[in-house]
Each structure stands twice: as C-alpha cells, then as structure tokens.
Length: 187
Image (cartoon, rainbow, N blue to C red; front, side, top):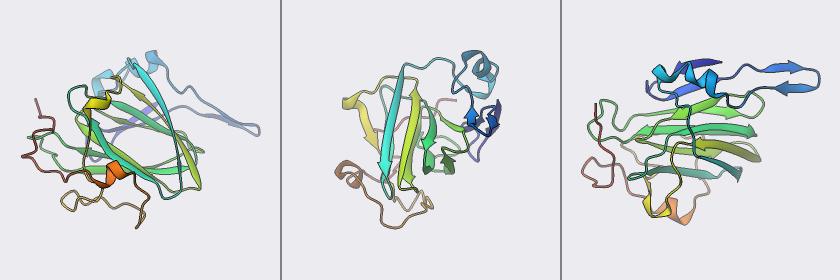
C-alpha cells in the first residue's frame, strides 16, 4: 500500500496493492494492520460506518460535513468515474478555504482520506458511479452541514458546467469564516 499527500497535506491518497490477471483484479479494500503502519501520516484504523452511494452522470453531491460529530471519510469509487473534492473549512487553518480534487475510477483502485474538519463533495463523470466510503463517526442527520459547491471564494474547478443538485445542496451557504457552524483549527 502506498500513501501520498495531496496539495492539502492532511488529505491523503491511498493506493492499495492490486493483483491483476486476465480474469480481472483483487485487492484488500481495508486492512487495519496495513493502515496502522500509516497512522503517523494521519490514517485511522477505526471506522464505525460504511456508506454506498450511487449517482448518475452529472450529479454533484456536496460539499458536506458534520460539525458536532465530525467524520473522517475514506472514499473510493468502485464503479464508474468521479471527481472527488476536499475543502479545508477549519477556521484559523493555514489552508482554510483551499481545496484539492482528484479523479477516482473503479478500474484503478485508490482511495482518498478526508479528515474531519474538511468538507467533501464529488461529481459523477461516467453514466453511473458507485462510491463506497468508510466513516470515523456515525451520520447524525441533525448535524448535517454544508458549503455551497460553487462558492467563488473557494474556486473549485469542477469538470462539469450544469450539475444535477439536490434541493438541499442548492441552498447551502458560502464559506465565510464568520459562520458559527464551521469547525475551528486546533493545532
């Protein structure tokens, strides 16, 4: 397993060892011992919830986070192709408002680790995409928060122009350090 930092040092790309032959491929999607060798880089070994999300082409989900029950997310695409984004929304962080994005594809297994304190979103680039992600905290519907996907102060270069959005995601507020519902940087 290979672990690399992104433009945001706390957001990591995890590449599992993939065994391929003419029948297809096999890889360990999670191994606590292997992840444990990378805890100094910020990878956790304990997860409490797994989610599976399916989206059609042009769907954009995000940018989501939880404030009082913050979730770290280990995200992968197991079918199709997505553009996955993490935004540092921790007020006071040296990288506040900065984002990083990468393409995840079910034919090239890899993960992105998005720590608590970062908003997460993705858009679907293929006819359909299945995303699986492990979470370090349970989903808390009353704690569901978000940042507007198209916030110009963040300036995410989404690879689509007119995404399909949920009504909730259309109404999200811009990223403003004065917002009371943003996490605080504590280092």
